Image 1 (tube, rainbow, N blue to C red):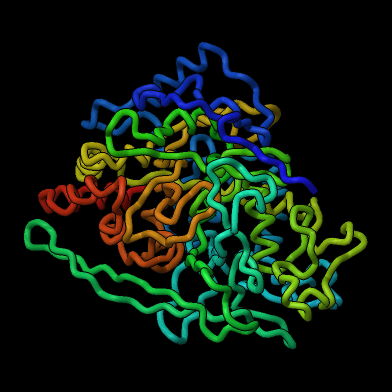
Image 2: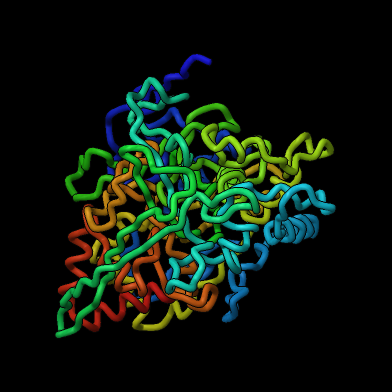
Length: 515
């Protein structure tokens, strides 16, 4: 098949929008919301959206609707581990039934083939977890192993090698960093396997402690991780192999993030820092196998997938080894150099189109993922929370963690349609400095860039997941540690947090905890 070369110049022009004008027409006009059935906004709606998403000026009181972080999907907060597992509040009766069925499939424990339970066989042969829920326990975020006896089930290592040149990449998009799967181990390291097959490797982590002095005589201790793939089951890694750790992300609100207009996100992009504010967010652009075109990357720590469906399909194939309409290989992520793995019996079912999960099942899990509700904010009127909110903006945190959007108006009864939401993310890639660099490019993201993580629900992590580990690899053990790891474009804001009065720093953390 000939390579499909997609020049970015055909998608983007070189001018940059002013940050003060986040809505309206974007100069990056070539990317489409192919996944959405959009009803175009009227001029009156555009004016309303501009008003409700304008930069805030008054920090003396709660803002209208900010408590409802997920718009009409928001549910009352539960102070239990099930806080992230509630259906969106605006689902119809039939949609809630689909949510419940999708939840059952999300929790399904897959078994090795052949099995009497045809609906559940197909695991592996290589895998990281036996169900979606094993990684995203209670729909929350994963964590690194807490000791030698703890499992790494909610965390894995991405792996790739530099590609010789861009022309070797199918559907190459200009600006993409040439890389390729590791010839033997593919794109991620699976640390579990079925009997008769060797696991690919085990993740090893060592930490170096770094003490950071803070104003007021306070201090924090960061832990700097080093990663290795040990006990390699299929020979050494290829020369130049790059490893990158990833913890499972929390699941709430992803359908709302998917429903934000591409142009609303691109309007914040400033790749050349034309306004000279030190912030140069860049869009990730990836090829959609489902829609057969370049699309804005939204999901994953480096925004490597454009839609919730494609993120879900990738996880089924890579994490569990389940074939699906997007990734139909019955052997999951096994490579040609793992001959026994590719030749192993799989769980393909003729009644499911020769797949282990068919389009109906994939759609149900995707719908469940899209409609997990965002809990309401807490204590928005607390004086310390409001002070922390002002510190957040004054320090420049909101330059990347943009507070709110209005989602596209969508046809039918789509629960994500036309909602004012508060994710606190610009959904763009940013240079986060050498400290957080994984030195492994992914798409148009280089080895120092990460997508801005949404903040909604971050204050519920301990309640839902039983830990307080943050960032792409869980190295931060608290919110202040997560802030102190920020570098690159966020270095100025990070340094301001270090030097600010302790009471302002405490207020900032309290604001984050209210999310």
